[in-house]
Length: 180
Ligand SMILES: CC(C)(COP(=O)(O)OP(=O)(O)OC[C@H]1O[C@@H](n2cnc3c(N)ncnc32)[C@H](O)[C@@H]1OP(=O)(O)O)[C@@H](O)C(=O)NCCC(=O)NCCS
Image 1 (cartoon, helix red, strand yellow):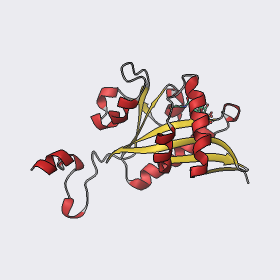
Image 2: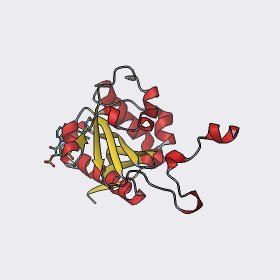
Image 3: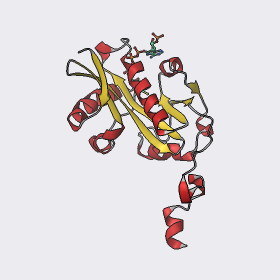
Image 4: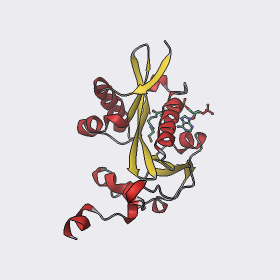
């Protein structure tokens, strides 16, 4: 049957956790909690061969014009076979289908992302919303990951269609809306 890249199912969650947290112990990527994998399972794709789990990756929408590739990992013995590239390309295609203008990643392996067309950017050049989940990160006070960005479209910000045809950033926050 060969290699298949497919959407994750709940039965994949334990394999994702084992792979990602095994690599996180070697400090090559960040760990994930069981809850964060299950709750965000729709973000994940997996690579398998003849039913064997080989790797995973996730695309998380962080704002109307940014999605982040997270938790991209391939089993040690299966690396350098093009699986990481196939996983990332599947997620980039998903981002295009969603109309998202920019894909970002925070990584210790910039060379892998550069091969996919990403460029290094300053953390400060990214919108604040992108760093929301950093509050839960063990490296919150000492982030040493390199920020990478792939520009898919020049649209600075997606505008909602119909009666709400204003930029998302111009909409009131829930707190403002509740008090006004
Ligand atoms: C990074 C990782 C996902 C790459 O997966 P992979 O299946 O080995 O990568 P691929 O075989 O698809 O490589 C695609 C290209 O990237 C290059 N590449 C892969 N890893 C690289 C690295 N660490 N540095 C530079 N280039 C790299 C390959 O040489 C290949 O180039 P080519 O197209 O010119 O042949 C994998 O090495 C891994 O799981 N690493 C541990 C976890 C990790 O660091 N994840 C990233 C967290 S953001």
